[in-house]
Length: 99
Image 1 (tube, rainbow, N blue to C red):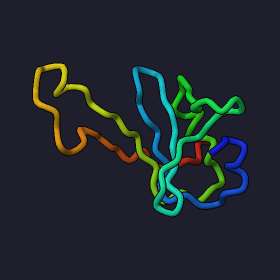
Image 2: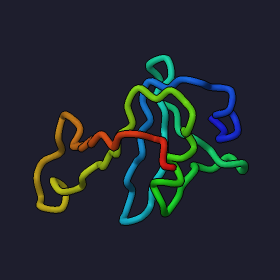
Image 3: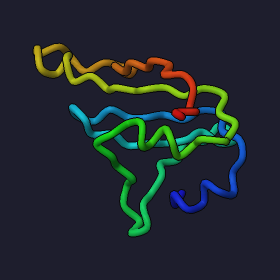
Image 4: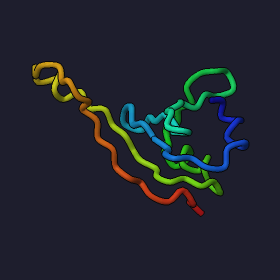
């Protein structure tokens, strides 16, 4: 979904801020039980070094839940076998109104 298309959507089931590295974030949204990433004007994944910039895209929108998601590489780093389930941490980050 292009970031400019956000203006056409009033309600989101879930907004997910993906923590990729220290101070590097991407954003995806759940709409009708489907997760889609936001893309910039050039068709590339929308990224930011400031998670509040990404949160502010949803100011004035109905967001059921907003979370920060981090996928851990810990198991791989310490030589553990590949997990059948995901090794993902999601933390609710609350309100999008960042006045």
